[in-house]
Structure formats: structure tokens, C-alpha cells
Length: 114
Length: 115
Image (tube, rainbow over all chains, first blue to last red; front, side, top):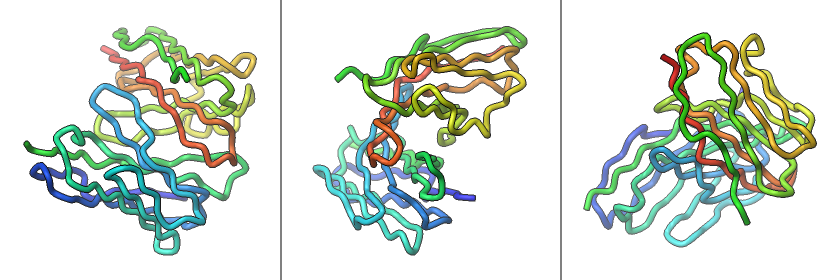
């Protein structure tokens, strides 16, 4: 059974710092991995999608990497800003089902202090 | 493009009452998901539709929860009767189709409080 974990559960950093969020999954048979952002009281917003054949994806100050064999992904945020404060969740899509079975991690709550 | 629409945004009911949530996915999206998110946790899949057929309802408490997706577009999720532990945010999401490597798009959710 696929399990997704995220470390740390919460993180507080001063503005301008570079930071890394971690995501681990137990079964390497995945179709893709997605990173989401969730603001309080809102739904999830897709940030990056990495296909299983890819190693990384970049969007602005965000860079996500994928090491499928070790079951790990990282989300790197450069030059953090207070507006980056939110919960970040990763999710994997299983390659063992005929449909897109999406399994989420519990999220990392990020606070960027001005 | 218009996003995923959900209503209502908030609902407060007493235990043993019934409640229904509505979701309108992005036009053309074949896959629709209903998730339950308890505070501090990641979303848990309740039911997944591909067009108007159910592909996964393994974690849906079928004695009290039901869902339908008529004509492969809008969907409703119903709880009857509600329990205190059903207090959560109910999120609807849609994606283009299985196997398309397309991201999930979420609505803003319905926050349910059962008293």
C-alpha cells in the first residue's frame, strides 16, 4: 500500500531564505508526482507536476526534483517571501491502477517571517 | 477557463441530519474526485469518477455517504445521517482524464460542521 510522508510537519523561516520541503513515498511505481499549495480556507492549487520519467521541474522560484528509485521528492523555494506562507502538499499517482489513483501526504505548514 | 465550482461554502448541521454538496468540474474534465480533509491532514479520497462511472469508492462509508455524477458532468455528495466525526472540509477536484499526466484542479471546498 502506497504511503506518502512529508517532513517537516511545520517550518518557520525568515524572509529571503532558501528552503527545502521533503516528500517520501513507499512504492516507486508511480505515474507522476504533484506538488500543491493550500492557503487557509481554500482548496489546493497545483504548483508543479513531475512525470515519472523526469528528474525535475521548475516554475519561477520553485524547483521540484524526483528520485523515483529512492522514493523521494524535494520542493526547493528560493528567496522565500511572506506570501509563500501556506501548507505545501505532495501527491503521487499510482502506476499500479488502470485509473489515476492519487495519494496525498499530510503537508508541511510553512511560515515566512518578514 | 472557469475553475471547479463547489457549493455551499459552509454548512452547519446537527448530528443525524442529512446534507448534500454540489460540484461542477472544469468543462471537458472526465475525472472527478471527492476528498475529505480533516484539519491538519492531507486529503483522503472518498470517491473517484471517470465520466459517469465509479472507479474507486473503497474509502467511502457507504452506510451513510453516497455520490452520483449524472451525465458525466456535475456531481453531488450526500451524507445521511451525519455523525460528529464527519466534520471536515469536503473538496472536489477534476482532471482531464486518467493517463493524461494532467494536474488536479480543486474547488474551494465545503466546510462542514456537525454539532
